[in-house]
Image (cartoon, rainbow, N blue to C red; front, side):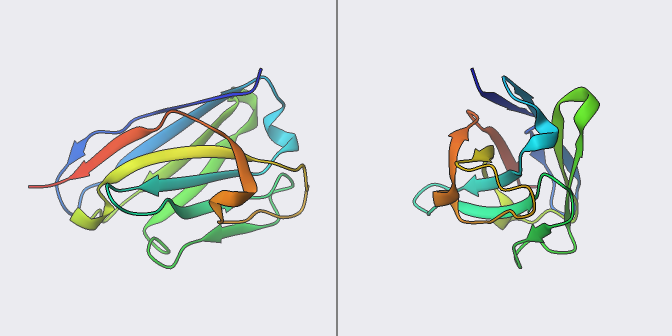
Length: 127
């Protein structure tokens, strides 16, 4: 059974940093691309970052480029999203997800490509 479990969300002040974790089970992390997404109330789900299974493709949304970093530890079956220089507009529920198809050399930021989702973790940026 494929499972993804996010953790690490918190209340943080503007300009602060936070690291989210996504623990996966039921599949081999090294074989799959993984993406990070977020959704704020009343807004569509937004793709933030992803990496391909072979690690050769990493993408970031313009809204987080230079501030967020995606990484993974295959031995720990965990994917991370390091977030820095956080802004109030980063406030949202954050999700990790596995795509619908196993394509070793690509990843995408469209939520439509993903069909396995975690329950999410809330990040609130406020003073």
